[in-house]
Length: 284
Image 1 (cartoon, rainbow, N blue to C red):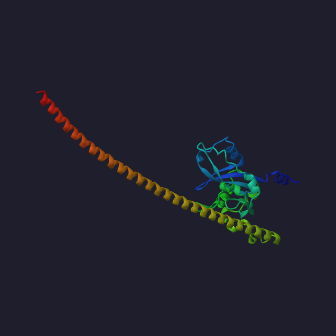
Image 2 (image 1 turned 90 degrees about the vertical axis):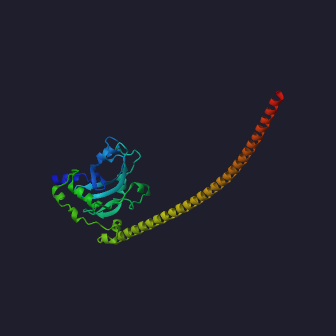
Image 3 (image 1 turned 180 degrees about the vertical axis):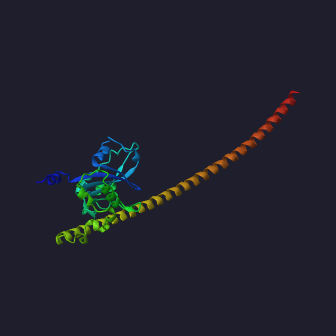
């Protein structure tokens, strides 16, 4: 066995990396050990403080081909440290991922929002789309090709990497592995993939129906709450009107009593004045 063959055997099969996205594109690239340091709180990312970042976990071979991609979100606190409650088994998700688009080295294993069989992690996933006029997958391909991470590979193999401008993005339906993407596959595999795609479509339709049912239930509850609120408001208005009527009646009674008391006081003053005059005359 030649030294070249030994080098190939000893070469790590895959390099793991994480890339952060901003609204303009990829904002940060790191090898997985650096990301683990972030998770362990050994380092912080002040530029990500108090934000939820869209990120992607990648497995890349020595030919600079992406073999797996997990599109996940990660929360940072005010100090730029990863939220301690964050816990996503990225490697496990990548290993169990379904067939995705071809990024130059054959179909990748893909996990993203809308393409994950485990609903437990849906809230922590996002779906690659367009960013700054380019597809997110194309941005990833460009970053991997630039190899700023320093992934070691054979020079002649690295030169054979497809140009990012020629990246052929499979239609989203093809991410599920349809028959046209597998013309050379055995008929049994094609039928199995078609069955998987049909099962995913049914699952998606079921989820939509469930969401619509939940929306209808929420709308019904909202109508009932609004009706109860209106009834309560009308009741309070009626109580307030009754109390106001009673208060106005009591006020009128008090005014009448006060007027009568004032008249009585006037009569008493007159009688007192007459009495004082008589007493004065008798004394003289």
